[in-house]
Length: 636
Image 1 (cartoon, rainbow, N blue to C red):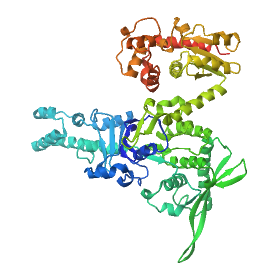
Image 2 (cartoon, rainbow, N blue to C red):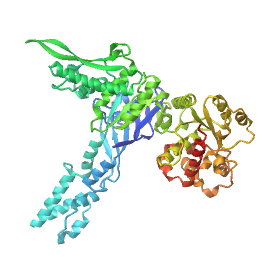
Image 3 (cartoon, rainbow, N blue to C red):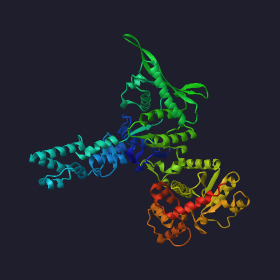
Image 4 (cartoon, one colour):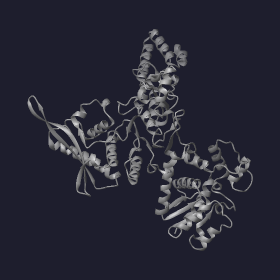
């Protein structure tokens, strides 16, 4: 099952998180320290934790300032459900359920799971007995005197009555039909007493477990093997659970890890070390000259019969070819220890059929900016292909500017409201937005000083439209923006001359303006000074054949009206718009306002591109394709 949304209530600083949408692949929870990011992950983790020792506890987790008040009010806190998660069955899972229970027996592929403080888990889903009963009766020819009874049988209660009637009839044919129908019913329901319980049994096995990893989960350089293996799994700390995962990778049975034969044991440990080294080197580009060494230290312990050699500690060291020395894992950087340890923890699930969702709480805090980029690559290329990933951060280097639809923002709004989680940047304070602003700023700087071919546009709306529609056209085999372009939104037409003046002598710069500003002497001066070539100043008006046009006029009128209505939940009609000036001016005039937020339709398209882009009219696509041809022609 795929996790689609989560709501957390009455857990630590969260009174009601809002319904938080979860991406199919990676979701990034951004917020300040103590804003509620970790609380959100911790509540979700306890819904179905990979480490069974993680439980809800009223005394630890219920909002402290409300606990006494709510008890006085008669609220049974142990019955409060702090987490509710909605899942969607995959096509394969839905088909499997339909095959067993009948098409439509499960009314919806959406399933909600809640869990209370006392640990009761409740699955909410809708069933329909009629298709299930029809599936059981399919293939049976009703005896002439039972035609009406077969036709009326739509529920399992009716089916039970039908079976009783067939059995009471006593004839050989009737007893055979009774036995065959009973067998099909038993095969469908298994040991369950009704349809809901039978389907619940299947859904329980499909529910993913949650692997939680935070700063307290990393390994130490020395693991006391016998002591760790003797502990029950549900009594392990997060650090011990990671260590058990590494031991599982090394083989925790007599054939390998516990084998008294040094050669067998050593060969297996070297194989494990080689495997982890390959993973480390692929994603840890900070130092590609590291090798993992794993060994066992045997300690003699006294027993009544004398001395016996027993395995005691597994040692993890890192050999560094750059400096010709090895260090215990404990002595490596915090960032490296985190990365290495997570590789070990994830290894337990990577090649398993067990469904899992990975929760990373502030991953890579000790990592350099470039190493954080490596971590993002690891998340995208390795983790997200196996399972969904949700991680929290306040680092701008762990926010991907090109994947802002993944971002959810957390803000603590005080005791009366608690922490809120949203994807609406307008509802969040500037401090919370800082990582997003930092990520965009870093991306901008990278483009400005690294990319040789820069397309300067006025704002982020232009950026979104160009990127999204270029990608769509490229996938359709049509002309799109050349991949060498770096699109740089500068924040307005007035800023463009300054940017061009700074960069024009050093990099290839093409400028796209919404409309040619007559008398814009500064741009004309730049062209005259040969800082900007004349053919590198492009206006939207040149593309659509109008003197005055904005980026929005590349859309067919019907397309932009639809986009506007979706973004603002409005009911604007094409017939409401009059004039030949830019469509944004026509809309503002109809609304009797000087201006509306042009960024909102672009933001809606960015977040809903899979639904909106396929429906764009040919006129829209042709206009953007013509623009891309003109822009590409300016490449030197």
